[in-house]
Structure formats: structure tokens, C-alpha cells
Length: 502
Image (cartoon, rainbow, N blue to C red):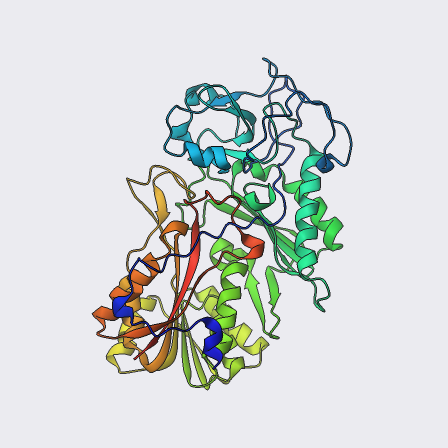
């Protein structure tokens, strides 16, 4: 059976709970960590400026050396002496709850963990700072944004007074590109996938996705934005003439994900067409529109998981793809043999992309695109009308909301992804899934709380008086999008759960 490949088990969801289903934290290190140049620095310093990082365990020993590393192409560099002309110093508080994580290399330092935070207020975002423990021991360097929740993004492999140079950043970009390209060596098509993954590659806040001869760069911090031109230059060197290059830049001074995407600006800096094409190994192709911002962006890690599931689950019967994005789940099912596919989307622009992608993949006759202002209400209407599907996919759209207790985090102070309505959505999905059918749900959850997905699915099935068996459960953390450190327990990741209903 094809499903055996996915690790199907016969456990009833009535007995699923947190215990026994937590996966080991996936913290693979793909490529080495690095830093970025060109950030704002005090006029008196000789450093070229900035980059964020994941701190290594032994980065304090070479402060006084004048040797060139491989990252600098073998050229000798001179470490700046810690004096009044050097970079500003950030000192950690005593007895921090996360002291062990920071000592082991967690790449983020939060604002409430810095003792002398008030002394850093006069420095611009992107300023390189030295990080020391409460006892004064050096803990590397990082890039500052005094107004953000993540006040310092650490730079891997650099000592307290190390120089941050253009050549250092260039070497790390090239190493990241080479590592990704080596994984697809021998492939007939050009590389499609994540080319730079922020802290994993020593380039905190910088993410680059390649789409053949096109690329999309995302700068999630104000400091990383200043490296835009170097990233463009290295992408051109790697790919050649770019058909299209899009930049998504963080503009919120506090780096809060609180404005439904408006905290980022989007610019097409190469090419004229706003559409970028994704080509998958199964001969499916999808156009995305970069003007849809991060909401419409392609998540390679998540889609790799969903692609395998779609090919195995929907070889016949009827399929519903709710919050269909650009139609990728439903169109894959149609090409795998599904008799009828309904693509349900609440964004008019994305619904149009669904229609165009169905035509692009020559499955228009099998696909029906529905644009509705409220997807959940449409699911409720389907349940009331007795409509049933053999496979239902719920790719629930992520919404960020204000939480008073969210003092710090990946998405800024006071804000995090909302889980409101997830259980109700699972309940409605279960109501329209036929006996023996499959319900597939995607969540965005903290990496250490992945099991919440099982709890939410269990609660939704109980409300619908349905039982099911777990077929598939995984996160979107892949080799090319791994965590920079095994201590990053505060990172959020997509989780995919598939159950077969009885």
C-alpha cells in the first residue's frame, strides 16, 4: 500500500494526546553560519558593518589573533581591539532563564535580556555590537535593533572585536548557494528551492528562494535590509541574467508582524512581470504573484510535505482544497487522478491564480474555483447541504493577533500567530469528509509545541462525533530550511497532520 510509505498507524485519534507524539527537535545545520557587511557603524570605527548570527561554543579564543580565515579567502584580517573606538557593547543580565541556550548558540537576544539596554538607544538599526555575559566574558558579536523584540541577531563565528566585512558576507552567500546547488547536482531542471535560510547560513534575517532563473529575497530585519545590493550582486553572479528578482523588505521599526503584511514593502528590481513560476519534479507548474507579499509567497518546506501527500492520497474521488493559495494541493490531486477538485479561496487575486494554474496544468475540466468572502462559512454551508469529499485539505491562513503575555518572540513584542478558530475549522472539515476519506490540516505552531496540532485535530473530530487514524504527521523543517541551533525552541514552524476518518 502506498500509504505505508507515510508511516500509517492504527491509533484512534480518541487516544491521541501530547504524550508519545512529540518529535525530537529537528536542528540540522545546513551550510555554515555567517554575517553581513554594509550595516551602519559609528563613524569612529573601522569596521564595514553588520550581520546577525548563531553563536558558536568556542568563539572567544581568537580575539587577539591576526590570522585570515577561509571565509576571508585566506587574506589576513586584523581584529579590532576592544576600546572606546570599537563597537558598542551589550551586556547580558545575570541569572537569565535562557542563559544556557544563549551559551549554546541561540542566535537571538531579546530586549529584556540586556542589562545596559538604555545605553544602546542612540545607535541605529544595523549597528554591530559586541555581546558579553554578565561577568564580562565575550560571547561574540551581533547586529542591533534597539526597538525590536529581538534586539540583537548574533553573527556566527565572530569574536568580540572581529571585523564584519563585505568579503565575509560574500563568502557566506556563496557557500550557501553552493550547498543548495550541490543537493540537486545532476538534476535536469534549474534549481528551485530555498537558497539562503537566515541564521542557518549565518545570515540572520535574510531568506532567498530561487525559482529557476528568478529569485525572491526576504529581509526580515531592518539591519539585513542594508545588505540588499550585495545579495543582488551575488545572485546575479550565481544565476546569471535574472529573469525576475523581487525584494520583500521589513519596514516596521519594531519588526512586528502586526499589519497583515503591510510591515513589508515589495519591489520588483529585475524584470517586469510580477508572476514567478514554480516547477516541481512531478511536472506540475504554478505561478505565484509577488505583489501578494508574504501571504502569497511559496513555502518550499511546507509544499514539499504536501506534494508527497497529495500524490498518494488523491488518486481518485473528489477533493476540496480550502484556502487553496494558488491551487497547488488541488491541482496536484487532479493530475494524480482525482475526478473532481474544488478550489476554495477568500482572496480574489489568489482565486484568479488558481484558475490560471489549473489551465497551465491542463486540468481545468476537473477543477472548479470558488471565491468566497468567508471560507469557514462556505464549509458550514457545504456541511449543511450534505456535501462530502474523499479528501479535504485545510491550509488555514495564518493571522497575527495581539497577546498581552507575548512579551518577546519571533514576530515582535505582543504579537504571535493566532490559533483561534482552528478547532472549529477542523470540525467543519470533518463534517464534509466522507467515511474512509482523508482530512489534511496545516498549522503554524511553536516548534516545541507541535503536539498541539494533534490536540486541535482530536478536539475537532470529537465535536463532529468522528473518529480517525493518524496517517501522517510532520513539520516543514527540511534540510534546506533547518534551524540554526538546537536551542531554538521559540521558533514557529508549519505542521502537517493527515488522518483517515472512519
